[in-house]
Image (cartoon, rainbow, N blue to C red):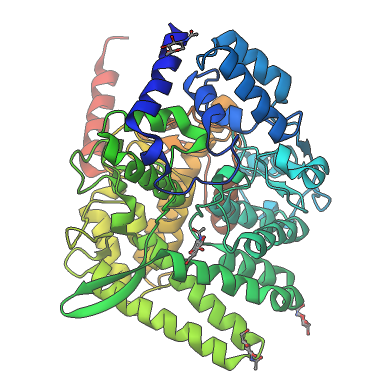
Length: 583
Ligand SMILES: *[C@@H]1O[C@H](CO)[C@@H](O)[C@H](O)[C@H]1NC(C)=O
Ligand SMILES: *[C@@H]1O[C@H](CO)[C@@H](O)[C@H](O)[C@H]1NC(C)=O
Ligand SMILES: *[C@@H]1O[C@H](CO)[C@@H](O)[C@H](O)[C@H]1NC(C)=O
Ligand SMILES: *[C@@H]1O[C@H](CO)[C@@H](O)[C@H](O)[C@H]1NC(C)=O
């Protein structure tokens, strides 16, 4: 059965023309980890539950030898290698996953960081102490072999140890690391943060941008740009101006990448604007999700495969992989095959860049370089004007992704619609109250276990009913910054909801998760391409931030904060009826 399928695959490939597979360059040069027949055969044989496993395996011999022997094997079997032989081949030429990393206990980890004392609820304080312990479990260091023989690994060497998200994610990721660093700074571990920052800066020096994560198959795509913010948080906490001075040009280089490779011009009302989008013009299935991408492509006509794969990579670059947010305007807005990430101008991406431009301007003035400070001030002003004209909707009171092809905003709810509040990227102070009203109008405050990622249930992990830690932070801190007492109170209540969900699940499972399902009283999330992961870097970071900010008020108890009047009445009635039942 299996043999025939492979033979057929090869025939199809030869018959229908390899051409379309090569229309766009591969995600990296490696003919083992990024493209080529070996990758295709192994991933399409589905030897592992998760395609990421194979592309994370180190080689035990040089890549040339592996390729040579694979070619011999394929010929010996007339290009349809039986499953057992393929497995034997991998056992002989590859090592088990994780061999290239070693556990690492951060040197600056210490007992009892100060912020724990601010947490009054004893159960929450004990929990925070356990999360603080978790940094030791999530610490990793790359073995020196990766430096001496980089060609044998998909892992990209980094000179400094780091904290990983956890679960299947044993390497570090770009935007995850920002929330991890916030947690580390509360844990009084600036040394660890500095090392992680140095790793990112080294990547910018080598590749001109920060890849999605530290694997070669992630090289040609980035993730939401938060490097300047990471720098600001570290430099402020550690008062390390020398580090800022040494690396400011590298930060500028990273922003150049977003300008040169990810800008898009938008015309509206007779004016032309420049904003940014996620866009990854590289071909082939994602190596780490190869069989899924290939299967999905098989539902479309051959000529559409490359475009689909590029849009999937752009979806991964957005950090929201995957979400109906990127399917709107497609033929089937609930289906991944409709993905069109690069056709949308995302609110959060432009808010992040707007914030980065402000930070760069401040960095340069701090170091006395006025002309550069002015340059970034101007870039920010231009972006703010564009965001106001293209993304802001005065009637709704929020910002919305802009659809480039259909020339209109996507009015669906996503927490990212409030990212400009979080990023401080708006000029009218009244916008906060409008945004609060928008949250109420969208009925978002009726969800008691966390802010949903969207209101569409598609089975994708960045959709309802999943809720993600970084998105809670975007909304909570966006509102908390406001001078309005009501916005601040809503921020607190949202924080209380999220803390309770995380704490309840932790109490039951002794684990922190990548995402939570808020539909049934709060539980680990699901959906998407892989099983929900435990760990978990950014979730822990956000919990620590909320416990630090609201430690004097948060409670581990189960009283519901947002009880709607009609629910309250129902609950009282139910209580009354129960009390009337015969004992
Ligand atoms: C090799 O495979 C091709 C296509 O599957 C088939 O036509 C051919 O007869 C096979 N040759 C041998 C020697 O098995
Ligand atoms: C960015 O664009 C330049 C050409 O303008 C190209 O050489 C480079 O490879 C691109 N970088 C990425 C990561 O796509
Ligand atoms: C920060 O460092 C500068 C020297 O770079 C020093 O003058 C200043 O006092 C330091 N500030 C704090 C709060 O430690
Ligand atoms: C400001 O920074 C730019 C870009 O790095 C540099 O070319 C210029 O010499 C700097 N000016 C001053 C006054 O330091």
